[in-house]
Amino acid sequence: MDAAQKRLSSLNSEVEIKIHKEYTNEDSIKKHLKDIDFIVDCSDNFGTKFLVNRVAIEFEIKAVIAGVKDFFGQIMTINPKVSACYECVFDQPVSFETSESPLPVIGVTPGILGTLEALEVLKTTLKLPNLENKLLMVNLLNLSFDIIDLVRNENCFCSK
Ligand SMILES: [Zn+2]
Image 1: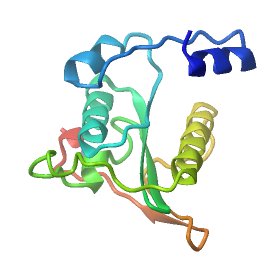
Image 2: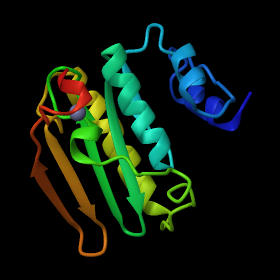
Image 3: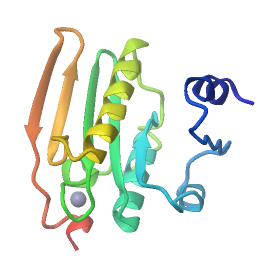
Image 4: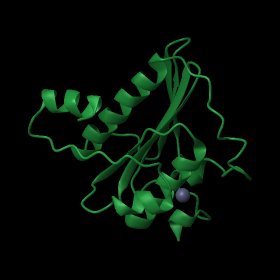
């Protein structure tokens, strides 16, 4: 049993935890979409974030995508056919090769953004105000949270 699975099971034995030990790519991610209600992107690279976004839109699964660098983070929630998607906001890099090098990050930043992602899943599931059509910009240096309103791009694949 993996450490994360063991720890999470000790918190709530009613939760079934499935571990998939494989890199995320187009084939592997699509194998695990059956009975999925929400995708939470915790990846450390842009290629996976764009892939998660594409799959969420294609299979109409809600998703939350977060990114971190240094003391900064961004997070948005995607509701297919309703809200702006990741590609409405961010242009795909010409090549992912240059974006695949690890970004420097201070340890607490992914912890805080991960907790915010969990909060988004709860709030979205409970139909409370969430980050659909919003991009939350987190600045942990000056401890500020700023929200940018988003609009679906009519020319984006998600609008077709
Ligand atoms: Zn879009």
